[in-house]
Image (cartoon, rainbow, N blue to C red; front, side, top):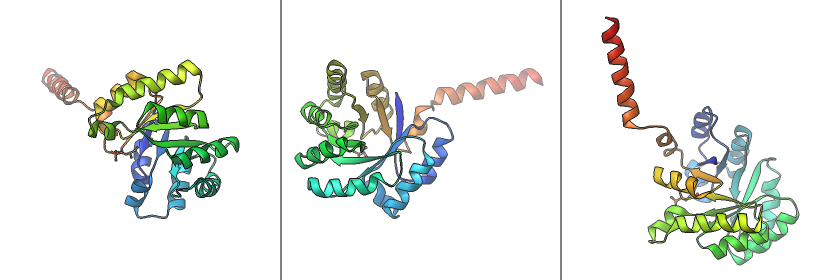
Length: 214
Ligand code: G3P
């Protein structure tokens, strides 16, 4: 199970990366725009900070536009992955890019059929959106489990990045269901190791130790 950070905040990435638990980073236009920085500059900085795949998304809507953007983005760093939206044009782009050896992350996956199409087009990663499916009352976990079964059954090389992760149960459940990766917002990451009973336990142990040593 790999953990990616779903953020473009370099300070946040650097801080969490000192734990040695970050396997990659994902961004999207919303995440990049929050930083108020130049797209290319921030992606290059993240790529040099993290020893793993870093997703940077295209904004063109036609296959030709996406391919053109992807070829430029792919030159920014060896570990960059081009994020492509799950559309008919996106699938055309992924088909071409995969033959050029450009790694892709097909994003905004909400159904098994979409995931399967992306795998067949040659996507390196697919990103099903857990939180957004829950928002509309749809079982995101069934989607993750089904996608993993399909990958294993047919032997696709594609890896699942469980995205739109918003809470601890999301992380724990997608791990149990076989998502290869969970991409986690920076503010959620510390919740993975924290528990109030751990803090209370430490406090009690230290108090007892002090009392014993008085
Ligand atoms: O990884 C995709 C993510 O950035 C979207 O999350 O919470 O906006 O649905 P959210």
